[in-house]
Image (cartoon, rainbow, N blue to C red; front, side):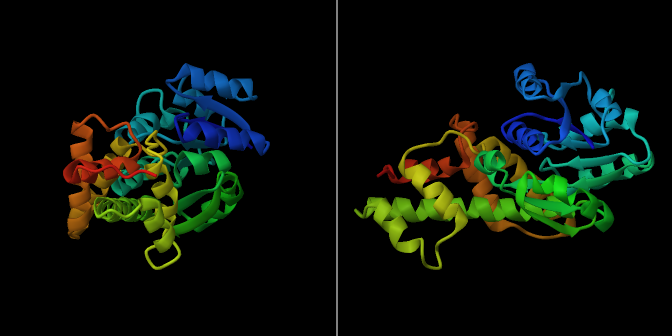
Length: 294
């Protein structure tokens, strides 16, 4: 099976490396030529356009920043659709609006192409380890056929419904992650300002009901003042914007999500958009005039 991979960024590059390690033959494309060269050095073949990737592949994977990028690569000039043919499968692992997944799928279906939307959660560390959580929308038989391929990149691969369901699930995931980080931030800033060591608070609560994967992933980094991006604030803004837009389309209010969105926007204005979303705590620190550290 020849696998095309378009998008070799903070997530796509380690994901594609894991596919090569697992023995898959890759054709890759990215605007970042250094990333392409890195994959070529590991045995991948470079392609100049998404169309060329598609011509040389049985299945094409994309890992791109947002909906417009996916539409351009899939449906635009020199895009996947120009080399689309019956039997080709397209797996979009980007986090985009569910309605866009449905739109792209419908256009490609006219050419006989099957599609899965398969966004991921876990950030760069889990992309490197191959332990991402992958949420998949699409036909059961297509999911079954490409389950083993996806399992190379993730420890959890779950089909949640038809096309668009993967990205709807990802939006739910991103809401929970954002609100968890905000809650952690409020709690640790309160404890620190009240004179209690944040590390002791963390160790005391992590085994109880307040414990979570988010708490274990982010509290140690925050206390070490490590805000280099595993998942950038700018990308979380994008995901929450998609969540709010989708929620409004189906008639669901998201008051807590909207509140955290404004916190993220405030951090972006303060020049922190490229930092990890754990930097949400810096919003609270600024208000309380305190720093949470070991």
